[in-house]
Length: 114
Image 1 (tube, rainbow, N blue to C red):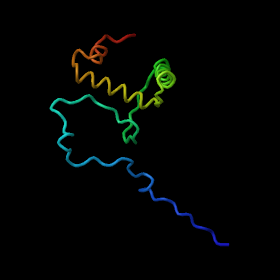
Image 2: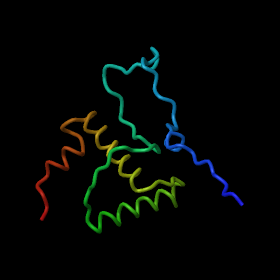
Image 3: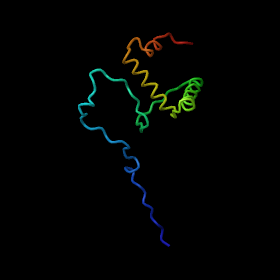
Image 4: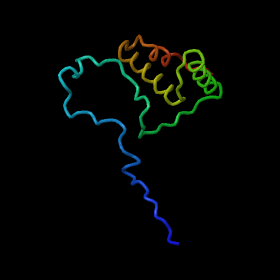
């Protein structure tokens, strides 16, 4: 009996874009205002860049607790990466909007503990 050949999808089929590419020129209603709007996060898309951040055991537990609280009390299921990306977006939007008065500047300007 001859072996059957199974057709396997090509890499282009497996790793195809899941969203439509952005138009080359935004429509008039989509043009950005002179002042930048609040940043958004990338959400649930494939991320090409990676960054490693070291945290303490307590910080990791707090992050996991926040993730579980979002799920159990607010019905929002997210992974830790998405939670961190959202927190970064919030901090950067605050810096852009409030400058020196932003919580990010105030906290980073505090003397280091330890």
